[in-house]
Length: 116
Image (tube, rainbow, N blue to C red; front, side):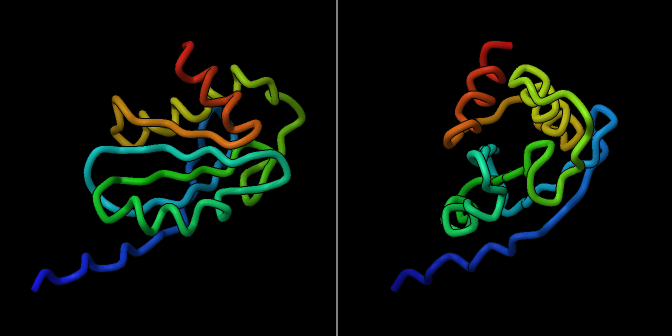
């Protein structure tokens, strides 16, 4: 009988990215995937999916600037700047290539990430 995969431990972290303190959740190992939340939400919306994906992937779910536990700077809320935050976060974690998925405004940031 095949044993179920162990539950991935979801850890909360902070990183200073582009002069902004970003909060993110991380779990799992393997090919990375980045999950971007929608408007009036934060990384915690992804917790059920993080637990599933982390069985086979490294999952990063940041709070975009201005949301959740991330800093709320005066500017930089255009999707291009937010995408640059996510790219810099990925680079700081040693991620060169990742799958990316977004919900609501997270989708707009994901598009800007891919376009850059």
